[in-house]
Length: 477
Image 1 (cartoon, rainbow, N blue to C red):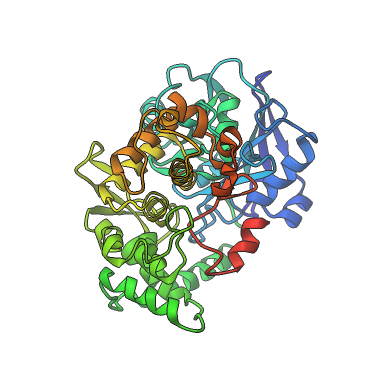
Image 2 (cartoon, rainbow, N blue to C red):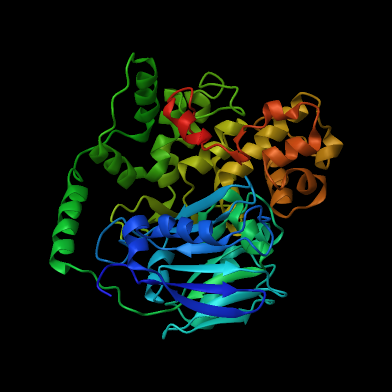
């Protein structure tokens, strides 16, 4: 099929082990394209009303994009879809890495799972495109990085893996799905949905070719996009130390300027998303101290440890997601337990930094790796710790309720201990907080919901709608 899409999906019932290949009518693609649109079409028509998000009737879908692997650029993200265990409504999470083209190279635009397996399994699709459910008992209990390494050793370096870590296995409602040893489709709690089905991983090794209708036209459009991406690459940018001053200037200006896409691209190329760290704090965009603070609480003298230059100083090489020439990711070398790790993203830095009043970058590197390996959403994890801090501060919980940890603002050791217990669903912390702020506030009661910052059950990203009201509409939708 020379249309960019593959025209088929794979549907597996994990309870019966039935595997079906289904053709999707062309009209569906014309109306919904592919990717999340296709996922919504499948789930809406097949998940029964009132289905338990962690029950057998819920469906878990992995979908690729319409333009993925067609020769276009910056079109390599994949989506996980399902009824969200975290909110009870529509759930989706997207991720970069290299997994998206692997779905299409197996001959499908999406892979969907229903039912619940009796024992842990993983899906393997071989180079010829033959799907098989395999025993995953030896993988269960391993973190996401270990799981990926084991499957690649077993099935070859060309195989691409998406998997859950211990957080998903233990049905944490703030767990996600990982690939490329540190990229995570983190939102909506879909790692818990995958864990509830006892599906540990997908390992895809297909080699099918993706055709396009008009190769010359696609090549021409891609060249235009590539030419734009290459523009301004030699333009000198200020040092990272200038970014908080630029943010402060934006805060005090009576009006805001629309950001030029070319400038944003240049900033991403130099620093990645961490260029926003101090800039956003000073601009008023980043939530501080569980959303009750401001840049005055976490000012430039304190936030300087999260300056963009801090993170690229230890970057050993750039990380490029599939088909993306920008390379905003990075592989970093640190002095902690994990000598090599993915560069934390802006959302992670602020969720583990200013939101908790923490100014220790080594701790952020370490916990970024801990959360990626566990398969837990760093936004939700940081938000949940901030919620717990405020509950403790207001006497709604005691030290004994959180396993004796002295959880005060900026206490690095306490934050590490708390998150490690949360990812393992261990002790009182695991029992109370492993499912995020909404569930924790329901368990604690006593008016603690006043400190639980979420929208429909999901913790908010690190952008404050009091600075940009457009986010309020987005968060409430």
